[in-house]
Length: 87
Image (cartoon, rainbow, N blue to C red; front, side, top):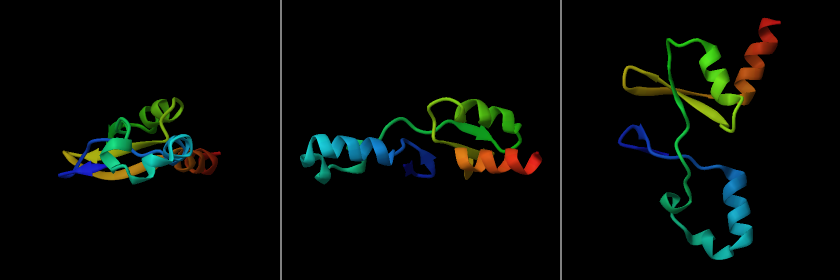
């Protein structure tokens, strides 16, 4: 979730679906009410190892910044593609 170009939170489809199934009144909730902590951020000049560190944990993705601008998003699938291409 971005606000004024900055990451302020994230939405996890599985988490939202689970919460809505448990309490269907949440279907009318705002994004702000359902969002979780923001994804971790790495600088575009950092090694892929830093992104790998976050992705091997609970994070579904990592935001990439260049200077102060968000310029990309790396997912676990992107990382697997990268690793398989290297091999």
